[in-house]
Length: 329
Ligand code: SF4
Image (cartoon, rainbow, N blue to C red; front, side):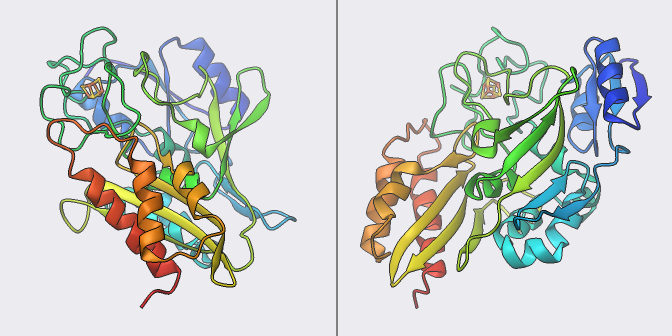
């Protein structure tokens, strides 16, 4: 491991100033991904600016019924929060399906969003990878890519985003709050927070240099809305999604008043299934109708040599989740 400076910030201003003072620095939250990448030689920051002690560890109910989740709230605490379990069960389910209990006790809300792909070529500095080293090529495209993207990938990168939590946030229409170096704050829709790779796969998100995630904002739950997170993986725990689905469903007299559907494990970011949502809105959620809507969404998929299995897997997850929420026997 290469030497690096360490700065512990106690205010946002201190953190932003320390970041600006050390070109090539990284913010450190729980460190469950970043420290691993440093050990592998993938990340070599000049300095770590520790933001884990910033006063951002509160979960606050806002007057309009929304929930503000501070960026340093631990994944375990967020999953166990009574209001999350009651009103946003898909978020609790997504969090509990990720990592191990020990990791969830340390990992933060902000860090979860910023975790990087687990593509094996990205994690091995001896291999070509456009995300780690722009212009070096993509080892996975003609190599081992069983876990990789079927939607939204580019010739430059076929990686998937590993977060379960981010998929639930996409379906919930959450927002991410960011504090900039100039002291200003902005919010970004969770659906826009992560990027598709295009010709700049090294850039995972729309976060600007020096910006700090300060909170995630969950809109007030709609009356009668039900939700679910389902994940398919190689083993029962401590594994990333081959495919996953987050669904929020509102029914009115047996018809879909509103549905939000997001896929994980299929793309470089959580994939909000707007085509399927449009087809389902106003329809009775009968199995054939749901399947046709999901198939219309997945028609955009471009599977690679070894990952076409993800398409029926994702379809079945989505159809089963919607049927469960709709009360199908
Ligand atoms: Fe790198 Fe993306 Fe290719 Fe993986 S898929 S080797 S992360 S460029």
